[in-house]
Image (cartoon, rainbow, N blue to C red; front, top):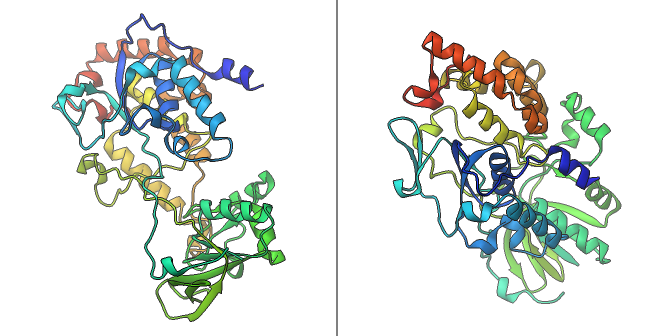
Amino acid sequence: MQWLIDKILSPTPPDPRVRLGRPKIAVVGAGITGVTSAVHCVGHGFDVVIFGAGPEENVGGIWSKGGYPDRQQIISQVRQLWERYGLDTLTKFNTKVNRVYQDDRGRWIINSLSNGRFDGIISAIGTCGVPKVPEMPGMNRFKGEIMIVIGGGASAVEALEFASAEGAQKIYISARSDKWITPRNPFWNMLLAMNIFGQETDLAPSNKGIFTDTPMVNFDVMDKLQTGKAEWVRCDIEQFTEDGVLVNKRAKCVAPGEPGQKVVIKGDLVVMATGCKRPQLSFLPDSCFEEPYVSPNCTVGNWHIGIYPRFLLMFLVDPLTRPSPFWMKRWIDMTRFLNLGPLLAPSTSLPIWSSSGGFVFCVWFNPFRWKWALFVFFGLGFMLPRDVVEVEDRIRNELGVNGDEADGRDLGIGF
């Protein structure tokens, strides 16, 4: 089945002897998102250069660094794509991107002119950078082998599941704040999309909506908390002791750092599930972070990783689909307004507009994008509307409206 889907939806790899003549795109990052984005671009005839901060062994991003479950299977698929589309010749390894700027015609320059000029940029730097390993007083005094997990994110959930599967007697999750826990269930997701749980304050974190932060999409965690196999401790870590961790245990509505009860959680093993520092977009020009339109924060990707690059390809090939800065800002304003929830519901409602609805509305909003719908949503390369775009280009040239020749080509001439 996977082979069949791959054959139907994957773009055809280009002939290595043929020079790709479409707009040139810089991809910053050689992880899964960077590789798959480059594949989309190359497979549809665009010239690509990938900038990876590390050596070739780091292809695959975070999956190349640790022993995650099925790690080898994931890396082998990334490598397969890498070789199939000839990305090895399109990548500059050990090249950290420190600066990005535009020339007089709006072309992008990565670090310096020696790397060439680009018509577009895909930032695929990921969300996991340098691991956070905080130094805490008394760490060297801790001895022994019940389990304490410091942190409340995805890595904490993985540690909890692993320890539970191995028969741990008790697991304490020591987290600074509360966390939404949602199941992997289509019916439950449909109920969330209907926004019917906005007033369930007793069951929700007191100061944030369900998707304003990354929730735990794992109902096994709730089961372990309810059965007593695991315990969620809302606290601040004070220091390690010889037989556990001294924490400042807080009530639900008490903010981190505020007074609480000093408690020693006794345990035999401590897991530092404190996450990673998020890579920064500081290499982008300041104009990308104009107040109040900061900062670019797209959804952490899964099925829609390819949709973002295809939007970029559409904008580069078809100027009539390109939004102007004015309409970009209005789009953000509208999204923020919709995110307020029905009748400006309190913060415990669901302040998010689903990415699926956003994608559909973005295409529907501009009639010149309708012809691109199958390409954007499904990646069907044979549906690339070349003929229609060529007719539109001829009409624009006859009318003297040509966005490609204008300074700052990314300003857009559509509506």
